[in-house]
Length: 81
Image (tube, rainbow, N blue to C red; front, side):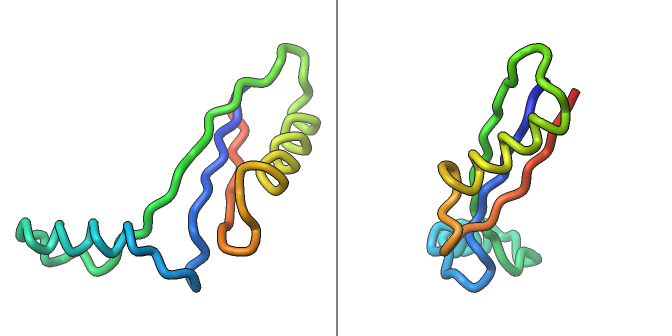
């Protein structure tokens, strides 16, 4: 079983990298792009025999305690078969 954790800055936090990308896109003529927010994701492979419920619980804990800074970032967990 695999899990993917998406981590991104909260919408209330300034994203200078996203702003730089948006400005570069505008410079390339992509004027319809109003905003860009950057983020990251982590692919996690879980051990065989791990239940879906345990996988979600473990990955949620890891995301909150290790992968994301809950003060400035938010995260989303997806569990795939």
